[in-house]
Amino acid sequence: MLADDQDIIMPSNFAWGAATSAYQIEGGWDADGRGPSIWDTFCHKKGKVFQDQSGDVACDSYHLWEEDLKCIQQLGLTHYRLSLSWSRLLPDGTTRRINQKGVSYYNRVINDLLANGVSPMVTLHHFDLPQALQAQGGWQSPQIADLFDSYAQFCFQTFGDRVKLWLTINEPYIYAKFGHEDGCHAPGLDQPGVSLYLAGHNMLRAHARAWHSYDALYRPTQGGQVSLALFSDWAEAHDPSSALDVAAAERYMAFVLGWFAWPIFVNGDYPPEMKARVEAASRAQGLPSSRLPTFSKEEPRILGTADFFALNYYTSRRVWPGSGPAKIGFEGDLEVERDVDPAWPVCGNSWLAVFPEGLRKLLKYIKDKFGNPTVYITENGFSQVGPVEIEDARRCRFFRDTLLQVSKAIHEEGADVRGYFAWSLLDNFEWADGYRVRFGLYHVDFAHPRLKRTPYRSGREYAQLIAQNKTSARS
Ligand code: GAL
Image 1: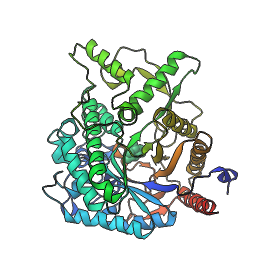
Image 2: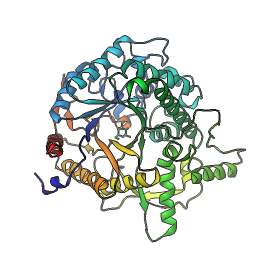
Image 3: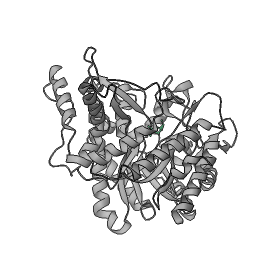
Image 4: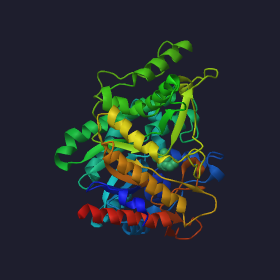
């Protein structure tokens, strides 16, 4: 045991979890009546994903769930975060047709988890919109809020007697930006400055609708909690003594995290600086109004529609004001340049510079800006690229350093953190990077006929940390 293990002290009933998502692990893409999602369509086009790989088979968790369950048991997790595939349950995205085989699959998963003392945290939408709904405009269409609400209510009715922690939507920021501006994720649109804000807006509306439905119709009997998983980097001033760099860091946080957190946790509207900047840039383009939509008074309220704060954190950036020619779109609206501190080791993929202190700072920021909410860290992880290292000492160090910072955020900053979910239980389909990038606590041999799962050393050590923490929390 390393000396600093003693310093990782989590509150009693801390949720020790690992996370996955349906498209990234399930496979069975056309099995038993599942309808296609936008990720099936995206991957089946040439040139979108590393080596044209896809989630057609992935870890085949649709057929090999028992193997995943063994991993969960070996780790001693108290919680497991999974997502439901909307198009496995409702093949055309609507409740007109329900796929009972999909319902049975998730019933089995949820029941097995509970029988093993593991609480499920369930995400309703983790990037994989049914293709049939994309054909009707997807997240850019205002009707999506109703359709999402019906799907959410179907899930609350079907699984809510047993699922007590719900996330409506995973990372609206990444979904909107990568899928509707950068084009590197499904649905692969690249219309700068317009469609991402529209998609983001409809995701907020849809989330709020589902939260209100839960609150009014299901919470009284089911007693669970509902939130959405928000992605955020931590941004700090490149030069802390420069007021402009400090302002750029604030702006970065407002555009990345505030875009979704401000309406829900602060005042029902977008951050003032984001509104002002998108409005000004839109006018400068000659548009009659802002590209950032406005919330209608007739809509159910957005403020207060989260029972806890769910945070996905991976990395940090040093930022300063942008100076190049004004670009049209999100980057032009934000006008911030960024890099990483050379002291932050880059792991696996180039965007992931490791800075565990960033998580502690971000938790303090969330406490201060968003009214000291209860927080679950719903994703955090460290990737490998290249020759597989089962004895992954660097990732072991990473988990210890990160959990130490979480522990400090709780004890020294007063953040109300109730759980931590490592991304991911298994190596899986890492979106546009395919299987090249491995985030698992368990290695998956994608060439093996049964996709053999083997714990990395970091998986074994995570299990030890959990066991130690459970013992110390008892004593
Ligand atoms: C998140 C996403 C996950 C996973 C992770 C690692 O943005 O929610 O599905 O892929 O990144 O890159």
